[in-house]
Length: 217
Image (cartoon, rainbow, N blue to C red; front, side, top):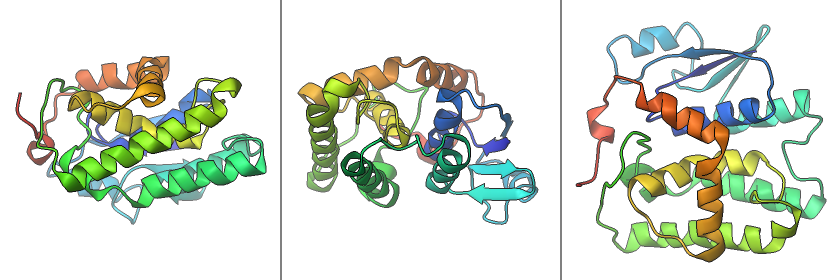
């Protein structure tokens, strides 16, 4: 397999697909295309007509979009274990993942992922605060229900954790407070060896995308 990703520092969608492959130690070649550069679209066109990352190549098959990639990898290489074991937990995990995939426009737009940055501050108005509270509730509910099965959202690591790992990174960058079980989960995600590797390698990147550098110190 070959996974085409963008800048580690900014590309939250790239992290999601990369994390699933890396956690399960599946062999894949990584191709990094720096985004926000004059040559970015030309380079991307070699790998995808969609013009976005991530993209997974598996032989002559191309899969684009993070959630589609995760579903494919789970089905093709993990015997479905990318999702929790039980019907109830799988339904919950898929619902949470789909909500993250299609929702939270305030968090996406106003708290862009920026792994290199810490101590940034942004104004939290009612719209942004509502989405932060929703994330807090999701994490709290999942951990309260599944903490006896392990430290991830649904006990064992799943695609849901891939969907929310970039949110944990965002919340650290901007000093966003979450409560109780959510705070414990967020800290666990940020201390995971693979997430720390991603952040460490993001720190070594030289590219800057100005419109994603938001928040005052």
